[in-house]
Image 1 (spheres, helix red, strand yellow):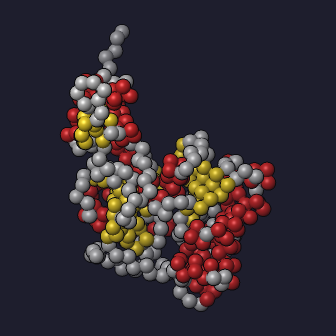
Image 2: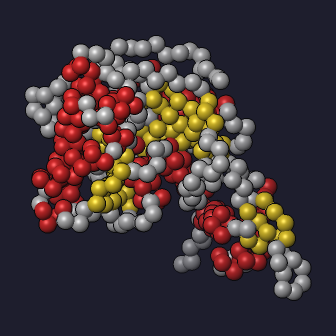
Image 3: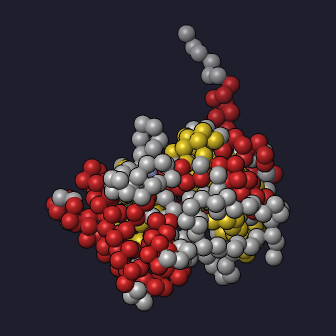
Length: 422
Ligand SMILES: [Zn+2]
């Protein structure tokens, strides 16, 4: 019996051809239709058809004539950087930060909204506030929104299963944001997206890599055999709430002595404040004191590094991965902190496993923002967003951020109703 292909197959083939042509123009453009046909193996008619559609949708444009050996000079095509804008946001830091990113991987505009020690409701309000700022700042067509959020995330449906630090449990973030803006939304764990970005944008493509993001919280993203490993429940790498100092400080999760209470940026700043009998300093101040050799600060920061090192040694022992990238705000303390991390890893892990392990400080500050935007572009258009070194002028800042010192407890700071514009 001959089965007719279901209708979806024809549509799938069309989508496949479109993605193939678009990504080829993106990768090698400017390119002529004839060149595209040769590279993709599609017929000239199909390529012309698809290109016609891409031109109509603004995803490609004709930029002039190319050289010709004989006959008519071919028209060259490219994907304009501004064909679509994408929003990438990072909810894993002290401030919720996001950017409008173009198809060249450049951040055009950035905005920040203080996260405070938000409860769940106000955290959601602040996310909307950040998106209002970003989406209000671009008049280009927006492809969608990529969100890197802390905690346990179901990437299938965009639900935040549990994010202790912002007090979210079972929040259908993707659906909420998608409904508000009518745009595709992709939500992924911030450490996992940091790992994907380090994997895609790193100078060398490693098949195995672990990115550990250390900021207000701590999480690891695991790339194994070239793909993101999320675990059976998508929570692989959630090491921040593993108890490492039993009976220690109270954690936001309600238990005592989690890794986050001794090794995170938040913990370090809070402890410096307690030791000094002052409110916790800003990160920049703490880093300056650390670099100036302030004994109290040095002791606290290096101890935090050792706790982290022991935790990472566990990952190395389990997975035997050679490449560790440290991301987030804690790496701002630099080489001396890194040395403490490494020293403890060597102390704890099996020496033979540690021998070839490199631990490096992540390069890009905005790895989660760019990574989330890149994932959205990959999903919606099938393009592997290239990461361009920010050329020329820095992105325009929209919205004002008041970098308040870190509150020790969890006062509910009021959410500004009106976003401020410069
Ligand atoms: Zn905890």
